[in-house]
Image (cartoon, rainbow, N blue to C red; front, side, top):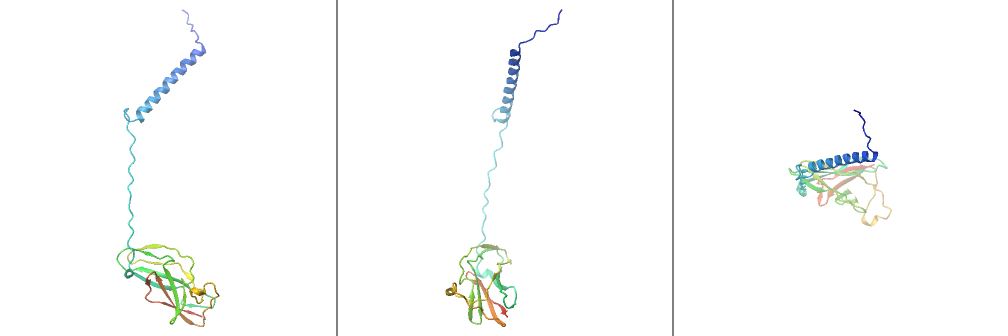
Length: 192
């Protein structure tokens, strides 16, 4: 007995290999489809959970009776050439949260000396920006300071050179308001 093997031509050899590989590829595709596609024994992909819309409820507007304003300056006395820094503090005096407009469209600063109205922040204001805050019960917030240039102002003097107010210990008072709410007291300061 001779143990001779007959060699298969190379084109038949490669055809057989390609047929085996093709069958294996088809088998893999079928298995993947069975696992992935519902209805063929696989499980369906979970449906995404619906998004829940959360409605944010804005607190009611602050009533004038809920708000207390306080006029503030950075010093009580200013030397020559020092410009007073002015701002206001606002406190919610109620037991309820409320919303209040505190933008430059609502802020007003007025400097007086006795009965003489010297300067107001809105006399020559060109840009105003609305801004709302929410104040919790008893919460206090403060606005950003602005500098008073120690001049007298009116709406007619915006483009003109305005007179500088005298120092020498002269007494001035700052009053503040937000919309229709005004500070009950003014803040006194001196210009030296």
